[in-house]
Image (cartoon, rainbow, N blue to C red; front, side, top):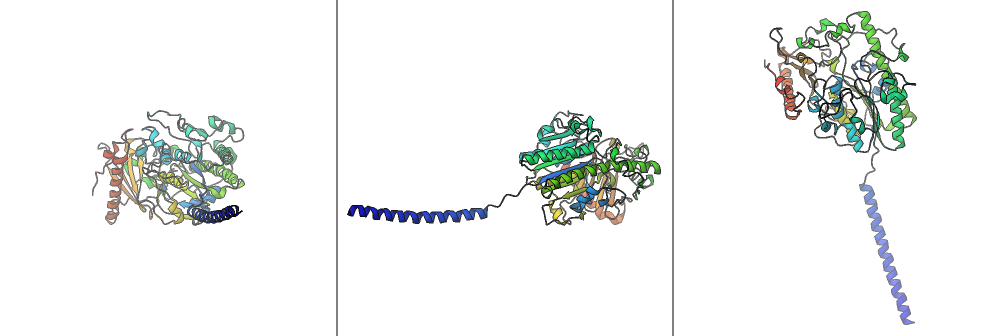
Length: 514
């Protein structure tokens, strides 16, 4: 009996100790759990991203940039709900190079890609934003004009996108210049019956990709690279009445007289004869050209509206970032020029609007004068997605500008022009107020000498006066010359050594010092 009682007492003692130790352990674990929950932040939901990118769209082609003749309700709505960049430029103002720039975040002399030069290398493509986003778990889609080939042997001409499309989850892209006729774009044929014009068809394709992505429960990034308003002039007949009786104003720098003060080299490419060839020289044909041009842009606006409406229907508009821009500008008669390519405002400057509905720190409907370039779009997209921006990128994230419109993320920006006749080749550099252009080309027989231009973009936005030779602007000229030299050194140190780019580090060295 005594032994039995002792066993009971020992059992109770052991049980009591065990319960006490268990309780202490439980409290300790609970304390650790609370600490762990406090230390580990809730993972932020990844935003969806849609990048609308037009072709040949001038910066003044919608109301939000001050053009009261045009009808662009959806683009203007983006500006009202986001931030509009007033000084946004393409670091190369021609489609092939610009599209390679914006895909990779690199200046042209680091992509090695442009007409007359060659394809984008696989190394550069491997750190493009679609590839990096897909590696980070995004569903990535593409629709429209891809615009450049990816090849280490400079192959793939007129098959642009054939190599790259394997890196997309959704592909509705087409090679070369694509077609406004949806049926002629192989990847878009399924949309041809309902949307015969490709501009609206790209909106429909984007909607399909969005719904596919939602079903997979993954964040998505869709790149919609419109052909519009690039030539040929084939606007959607559905919108023939939009600008039927519209009368467009001419910019203050319209016409041949407003281009006489510019460097002789600026008139030695195709931009000069196209002023007359495309009808900008006569009032009747000028108005017709502008009506058709803006009708093409209206089609883009309509397509964007299709997508925005679907985002609202799906109730994901509050987590979808919108970026809107263009691959280069368009002269439309300014300075007596047509087309693009040259580094003057109408040729290189384009619209940029960014909408981030998630950030309540952003004051919407704001316009910023902060300098930005097409390569910055790339870095900004990666930043939005929480993906590390590669160290070799030339682009800088514009997110700080969204929260404070006075923020300057860069001191300067280049514009590279090495396409077409050598006489038109030049290197340009800008800061927050001035633009400096150095034209290297000389021809003694024609009396053409190397020339430099300096424009005060803040006080002379239409570049009506070259102030490079004015004594009162000597300090500004010297500052921009130094920025130019720094840019050329960067080209020499980091530029590719193939496709003819190395020679420009000598060609573009300044000969003028006074």
